[in-house]
Length: 97
Image (cartoon, rainbow, N blue to C red; front, side, top):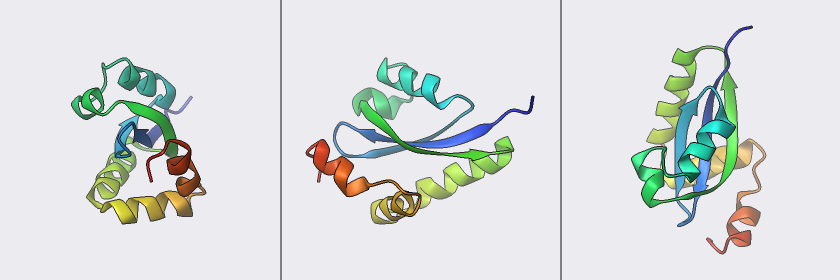
């Protein structure tokens, strides 16, 4: 079975976004929540997975992660909206807008 590679975006407890790469988004999210993920998510605990994109190759996923991380916050939110994420509703739910 071919591996799948994902770029995911997390909503953190301060309203910030965290973007990462993984082959298992759920497992990686659990590691972030347990404080064993990236340094950033240790000080900005994630609330939820906002979205993930699937890619066939590791190289493509890493490139897309890099592209997303270069966007400003407004551009990131627009990309999430264009992928079907109801970002305003989610931010309101958590009191982050």
